[in-house]
Length: 223
Image (cartoon, one colour):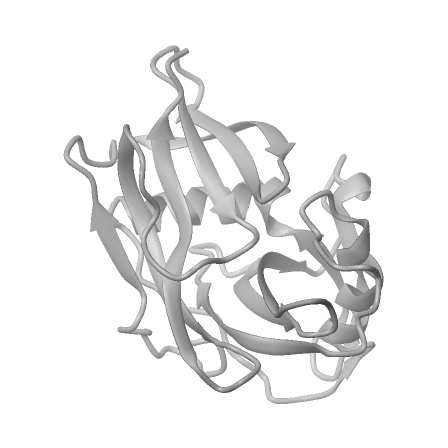
């Protein structure tokens, strides 16, 4: 169970993201992050209790129209080996001290727990409270269902609107699947052939409207 500490962060998460977000290939703004705001999300627990896992939604209202971005983050007490190129930044936590903040799509702990959520082996947790499930986060199963044994994470690729992680059975040969994290959020579920399961959650638009859509989905790669 992750313990949520209501304390100071220096810099804040939004301050970290203000520098990192415009450099992403799926960022759609013009670099003006003056109206970046937190807009929702949820957490997952690391069974080992070492890594904080947060699926944060931020909205950017500075461009032609508001855009909602999914920013999955992991928080670690020490650097993740070989992951310097996916480091969002470091911050000082008022209770835990220095924390290394990573793009969670590249963190194997986050990938494994997201797969566990899709397979019904993990529960979404409230973003700001300890030991509090978030019942607003749902998992919608596709016709073929989500394989229970998927744990391995492979190649990670960014597109104009998503990040795709190739996953399979850890240490074993077998079918591969694409775990897609939707970076530019849209209302409604993900649609398409071969979707085995998807995570649906909500966020708040800059005008206060409640939105809900797919955050991530698992599909067949055909490889």
